[in-house]
Each structure stands twice: as C-alpha cells, then as structure tokens.
Length: 110
Length: 114
Image (cartoon, rainbow over all chains, first blue to last red; front, side, top):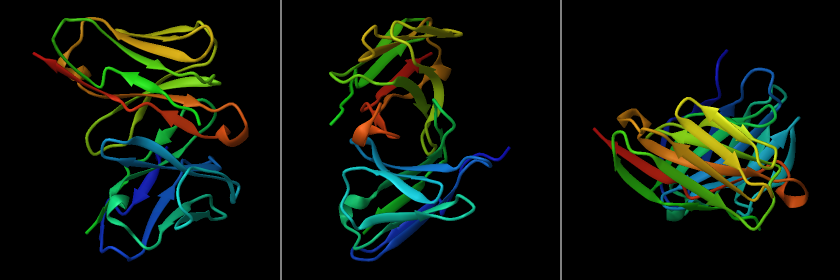
C-alpha cells in the first residue's frame, strides 16, 4: 500500500510569488490534513479537508488556501509569499487515532 | 486555544540510560499521540493512547496517558543510539474548533551517544 505522497520535495520561491503544494493520501482515506513545521515553532495545523470540503482551519491568514479533488488528493496554495512562510509543509491522512504523514515539501522563500 | 507543553526540549544521554519526556496541558484531549521524526522525513506514529490512565508498552518504550487526559509521558528504558531523533506529542481535539486537528508539543530532540 502506497503511503502519503507529496510533491514537490523542495520548492524555492521569491517573496510575493505563489506556491502550490500537492498531496495524495493513502488509498481509501478521504481526509487530508495540512501542517506547517517552521524552525523552532513545531507543527502548526493549517487545514483539514474531508470528502472535498474544508472541515477546519488553523490560525493562518487567508492567503493560505487549498482544495481537495474528487480522488481525495489535495492542493495547498500559498499566495503572496513572505519570508516567514519558509517551512516544511506536511500532509497527512488518517483513519481514526493516528496520522500517516508524507515526507513533506520544503518551501524556501527568498 | 489548546496548548501542549513538552519537556525537555533537548536531551543528550549515554547509551543504556533511561529517560522520560513529558507533555502537559490545561486542556482535555480525546486522545494523545506520540510521533518520532527523522531529519528530512515526516513524523511517524509510535502510539495512540485514548483512555485516561492508559499505559502502553512498545518494546523499551512506555507511554502513559494521565487520568484526566491532560498530560502524557514517554519513558525509554536502556536507550540506544538508534533511539536518536525528534519525539513529538500531539493531542487530538474533542470538539468545536478543535475538531479534527492535532495540537503538537514543541518536540524533544533526543541524542543517545554510544
């Protein structure tokens, strides 16, 4: 069984640009969770999608957005990139009681 | 806002020593999960504890969930260099704006020297 896959592995963008990150959950899992892991800040909850709908959102500005497709894969979009958006962005899918994370996308904003 | 205080932040010990990592909160969680993360990888789930007072053992690792479901601990017996990594606790929200999200502690960077 394939795990959670994320692409790209690394992404370098200039301040003010937009970034698009992609995630495919484990086959059969309908939920996708996005987390930001910035240096020194731990993992912060960004977004939860289930069955194509946004179910919950963390304390992030509206320029962080996303969507979930009919095949349950998901995109995270970050507009108007700022230097402090540099972080590891992790996607996870979950049955109950435990996430399976992907390896993440390392976003660097210069 | 739910917060999880994890301590210690750094732990450097010799092979064979025992150690305990703590996670504490003023909030009640529906479950508490422990993860281990290697550099360049996503966190990997070690265990989930659900019931207050629950104790789970995974080889040399013992996990405990507090009676009030507000705190948890991870105890490693006879640590080995292969235990080196970042350990994260995470609490699952039980409702309202916390539903479906995990609140993570800041993590404990464990280094076990041979």
